[in-house]
Image (cartoon, rainbow, N blue to C red; front, side, top):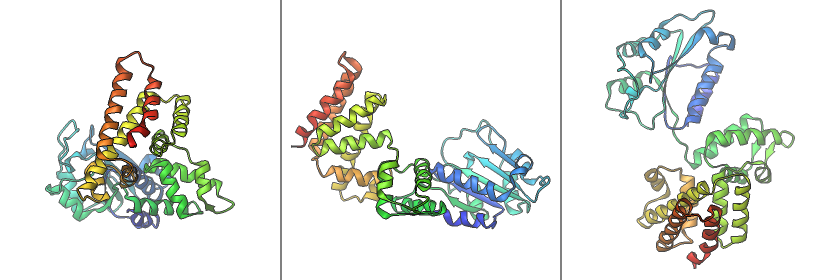
Length: 341
């Protein structure tokens, strides 16, 4: 995790050049905010901060900014976004970038500038000369998707920064209800920390009572009840979603996606793949794989294949017939226990 590097920045231990890369947008945004907060004063932002997006901007202009002396302040900070030249992915830049100015700068960075290159890519092209040079000359901060253990550590750290503590079972419940989206988790943690101001501790009951459930989580709860043959409870949750103006087609798509994941996890597990390996192969968070693996125990592969056919039929029914859309999911949920037995 990049928390260690954040602490260095907060102590004003700056590197002249940072390379921030990875596919976790929250960590990238948080890194930018921490740098801005601690590197320059708010009243200097207009003069000593600049941001360049290379999808339609010029790298050469960004480097000119980096070489410019700060005005009425000690340092400048320059952000460079979307450096497509660092990845093997198809470039979106309108023009080919001249890398010579950046290469020269890396050997002799301006002592009064913090240059931050922000590459929102899962991987960089390690074959390229500029990638190798940046990794050698810059401070590298990897903003990658967090695994289950890292999310637990991150939640503890964020809760602690808010001046409170959190119970272990409360962390598990928070991730279960909010999922692994760090933006959503951060919002929920901030709310819970305010509520726990007097007690100084976030409990599981607080999380259960205060945490907002996403549509995805409500659909997961619906599925969980249906799998455990609690059809009445599953239908109640479904009707609640309809009252919240959620579209039946969207609910059906989420159900289909969840069952598809359960089927894939079951198939890969039967071949001896571990949960981390499955998560990497399917490109989903390990926590989702863990939950899917738990549900997979209730079904055979044949039963799951039949259920997915039922969902495909329901989708066709919704889109092509005059049958009431809401009824299609009702029928699916009602019939689901028969598919398990």
